[in-house]
Length: 126
Image 1 (cartoon, one colour):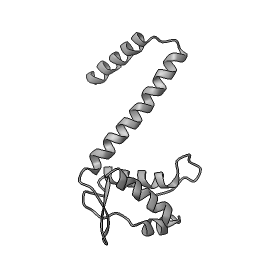
Image 2 (cartoon, rainbow, N blue to C red):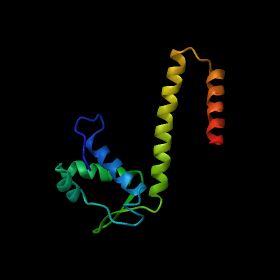
Image 3 (cartoon, helix red, strand yellow):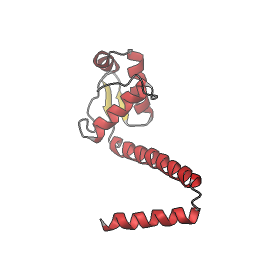
């Protein structure tokens, strides 16, 4: 994993997203132990607190769970949680951009909905 220090995303968010991607790609699976904050800090040359914050974010979202004295593990529902989160965030951003662009172009709501329906039909035919 390579961190982007020029990104607007904080390092701890980049770490959390990397672990999510590892889960989605099945590199990490349900009930498998994940890197500790100290392993991550050594691997990425960052402060352990920053790595811990990324892990805590995933615990808060129930993607990871803690086993006292053993570390953190991937939850059974991690993959579904990540998929839903990413779909919702990505689609919300795309729709927001689409609506703003339609407003700039003076496209009416009815016309925009018609365009979306036509595209969905085309997508179903492919």
